[in-house]
Structure formats: C-alpha cells, structure tokens
Image (cartoon, rainbow, N blue to C red; front, top):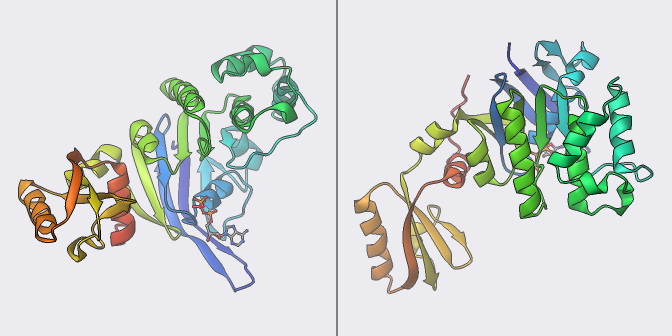
Length: 306
Ligand SMILES: Nc1ncnc2c1ncn2[C@@H]1O[C@H](COP(=O)(O)OP(=O)(O)OP(=O)(O)O)[C@@H](O)[C@H]1O
C-alpha cells in the first residue's frame, strides 16, 4: 500500500477574475519509507496539493489516500497517519513549548507522551527552550516547534512544506539529520523546497510541478543522468553574447552554460573570444538538480509520467 496516493487530483479556485485551475489531474504514488521531493516554481500548486492531502482544501475532483485512507471520506484516520509541517508560522503565543506539544498530543488522543516529547525537543535542539513561552522564541526556534508539533503522534508519513525557508545553516543541519533518521526508521517523507541542493541530497525520487501539472517524475539519479553532463561557468565583464541568450543561467556577472562535451565547451569559449569579452574564474562542473529544474521549466518538456 502506498504511503500517499494522489489520484487525478484537480483543484479550481474561484477568484475575482474567474475560475483558476491550480491543479490539473495530478497523479502519483509515494511508497512507504520513501523520501520524495515535490518541486516547482512559485504558484505551481505545491501548497495546494499539500493542503488537499492534509484535508484543508477540498479537491474539485480526484482523490487522495494516505495509507489507504481517503482524506475526505476518512479524514480522522487519514490525518492520524500524517505529520504536516506547514509553511507559515502559526502558533499560540500563550503556551510554553512543552505545553504546546502536550496540547497537540491531546488533540491526537496520545496520553503520557512526555518521553517522546523530550526526545523531539532533544533532537530538534529545543531542550533548553521547553519552558519558554512561544512568543519569546525567534522565528527559527518557532519553526523547530512546528516540526516537533507535527511529529508528536509519531506519524508514519511526514510532510514538510518548505521547512527551511529563512532558516539558518545550523537548524537546517539539525532538521535534516533528524528527518533522515526518521526516514531510515521507515517514515515516508514528502518535502517541498526551493533549495534544490537539499532535494538533490535527500530525495530518492522527485516530481516537478508546473502550472498545476506534473511535468517530471523520476528517480533523482535518473533526472541527473538525463541532464546535459557538464556546465561551463565563468564570470563576464560586459554584454552576454546573443548566442547564449535563452541558454545561459545568469546571476549578476556569473554565467553558466550547459555543455554536453568538450566540443561544445570549445564552441562556447570560441563565442566568448570572438566577442572580445574578458572572462574570469572559468570552471567546468557536473550538472546538478538546479540545471535539470531550469531545463524542465523553461523547455516546457511536457513529459507527464504516469
Ligand atoms: N485560496 C485561493 N484562491 C485563489 N487562488 C489561489 C488560492 N490559493 C492559491 N491560489 C493560486 O493557486 C496557484 C497555486 O498556489 P500554491 O500556493 O499552491 O503554489 P506553490 O507551488 O505552493 O507556490 P510557492 O512556491 O510560492 O509556495 C497560485 O497561482 C495561487 O495564486
């Protein structure tokens, strides 16, 4: 049985400018124990899909099963299987961290949960904040509490919606170590993130959403294999040659160009020489997930995987 099964999920929002289709027949399964990445640009529909999964938004058509439980028809059973870390920082300012976690345990009917709460606090670097009031915590600390809250009932399926947005390096490392440990112990993880190096490092399989549709769904290693094998990276002083427009990824003075082989690298360098440009810090690196992502999003490669 799949940990999560999205079955032809569509969502149309009513908006002042008329109906807006945020999800268009999204179908895929996430296996038990899998670490799965859901990627896509702003507005692609990731949060909408997670909200449908969490029972917060009703799909216009299609259905979602969590370990066999329909999120609409069997809401309570499905919700018990899920630990959802929301993107937004929502919290009750009147409680201490421990109180907030006890209340959340009670919400799921879990009694005498202090041993697990202590383990969560320890693993998330919150042990010395247990008696702090929620409103005294920094944004990063609040996010740690949100993660702990999502896990109080030991859900077999963990859903993280951009958990590392605006989070410092230390918390990211703490968080990923802990989530990776839970995954090794058998928990399935669904992650959305804009940090593609995190997705590349953590996720064994990735789906890419674009305008509400699945445009790629593959093992991470296969996505990387399918990409152009190399990237030529250099700093440039002056105008980008017209030949590179639409091909290059430009960040300030840094230009990155996909290059399949030595011949293509030589061709790129010839274009630069011909344009009389001064380049610095030339290097050749292997293509990464960000290159694949940009490729999929800009080329509009419409490979809708089943
Ligand atoms: N309640 C709503 N009413 C109308 N339109 C909505 C509503 N919620 C979301 N949308 C629209 O649906 C689309 C998908 O939004 P969603 O938040 O799911 O995207 P996302 O992939 O999570 O984006 P981001 O990376 O910015 O978080 C967007 O165009 C958004 O404006």
